[in-house]
Each structure stands twice: as structure tokens, then as C-alpha cells.
Image (cartoon, rainbow, N blue to C red; front, side, top):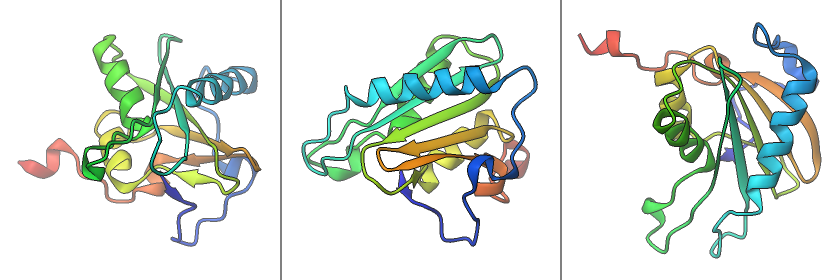
Length: 155
């Protein structure tokens, strides 16, 4: 995760981003609770930053992941990608919402690598973000990653 993006996007409650079809505020709040809970399992002995991610698929299943740091920093796995891998391994076909919780007081957003990995599966993903010191804010993945690479770009 990276600090709040510097693209000029203003994080507002809900950020003008609509809920995915079939998802209500109560489900999104429950997803946020899953993200906060899994953050307690993070392995972050180097940064001390705990991050939890919870992905909701179109079938209503929740897939969670937390950050797993490594002494070889490049081998660190972000919470978002951990949740994505769990969703794919469970057979999720369509992802609709992602909730993130991070321990720092500043709101953290997915890093560029996580944005691209999520874009592969869900360009229209709604991302709900909070931290130990901020209110929830909502973003669209397409808004955070304009021009994300798709399989069509490789042909």
C-alpha cells in the first residue's frame, strides 16, 4: 500500500463512487470489519505496518489477506495481492468490492503493483479504505489506475 495517492484525487467519504450493484452499506461495513480483523495476523516485523484486505466476490463470498513482510523487501506480499490470490484459489469469478484497513493513522491506498494485479480481474472494482486514524473513503480502481494494462493490450 502507498500513502494517499498524489494524482489530485480527493478522498471524500464515498468519494463520489457508487456502491457495486447488489452491495449495500451494511455489507461494505462488514467487509471493512473483515479487513480490520485480518490485519491483526499481518507479519510486519520491519515496518510495523499492519494491513488487512477483504475482497467480496459476486457470489457474496469474502476472501481475506494480510501483508507478509520479508527481510528481502522485494519478496514482501501486500495484503491486496494476498486476498486476490485467496479469491482466485477459491474459484472466485468476479470481484466487486475490496476493503482495506491499515494500522498507520494516514489512509493508505493500494500500491501500483496491487492496482495492476486487481485490474486484471476487476477493472471496475470499488475500493473502501480506512486506517486506525481516518474515516472510510471509497475509490474506484479505474480511477486509481487510469489506462491499466489488459490482455487486449498484449495482442
